[in-house]
Image (cartoon, rainbow, N blue to C red; front, side, top):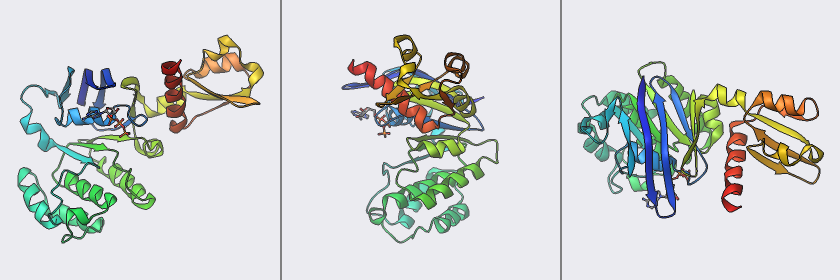
Amino acid sequence: MNAVKVEEVSKSYGGFRLDGVSFAVRKGFITGLIGPNGSGKSTLIRMMMQMSRPDGGQIELFGQRLDRDAAQLRERIGYVSDENYFYEHLTLKKMTKIIAPFYKNWDSELFGNYLHRFELPENKKIKELSKGMKMKFSLAVALSHAAELLVMDEPTSGLDPVFRRELLDLLTEQMQDEERTILFSSHITSDLDRIADYLVFVNRGKLVFEESKDEVLERHVLVKGGTELLDADVRTLFLGLRETGVGFEGLMSDRERAERTFGNMALIERPTLEEIVYFTAKREGVRVHA
Ligand SMILES: Nc1ncnc2c1ncn2[C@@H]1O[C@H](COP(=O)(O)OP(=O)(O)OP(=O)(O)O)[C@@H](O)[C@H]1O
């Protein structure tokens, strides 16, 4: 069962084009949306949140098409982003009074607990909060109305390492209940390494892969060796390659092929998610400027 289905979605902004992207967010799991800066992650999320419309293709939330009757869907989603969509001049307390009535499942006691846990002062004005505190407030709201789907756009970017770790634990806690689904976009891949079950990778407006995290980490290999191993044919095997005077490091997406090609002439290692993103984005960069 899918909480979100994105089908052939496209959107153009000046020089940028999101190009026929399709993927699903499985119910009951944490899906990480990864990609370098400007790859289209927020554009996709904003369309899911009905803050903008696709030029082509369609999006379904909980099996309902967004371009049809989707007005009541908002309540089932907790949205966290670093864009501030609260009134800056209000205190947290006053802002909460405005927000709460929008949700029929609003739990004030739970919300109070989150404010306390996140050390958020109720009498401070939104504009007086730091970026991290605004993110925490947005998170407290998202977690306090029994949302089935949490959509988080770069939730860890303004947070210090201590709270970042706490947030990841908190999200894992939320998943005890199999009814919950999380879509979490980030370019901080170590966060997703820790908590994601599935990964959706977009680069320059295109889908690179949609796969379980374990499969992604199992399938890719980082090959390290001397430059004498590289000829024109071998170079084409790599998704991305980095050469120094004495050797190379390259990413391949097929472990068996790497083992057949290099045997024990090169070091074949398991890459981190960060390395997978880095080499893939680098390759695309080379192709575009060639
Ligand atoms: N409202 C808009 N008007 C014009 N261009 C836009 C708009 N929103 C996004 N873009 C452009 O679309 C591209 C993709 O942006 P997007 O915010 O989706 O990337 P992202 O993957 O979320 O990046 P980041 O990790 O930096 O947040 C960028 O080139 C951006 O400038």
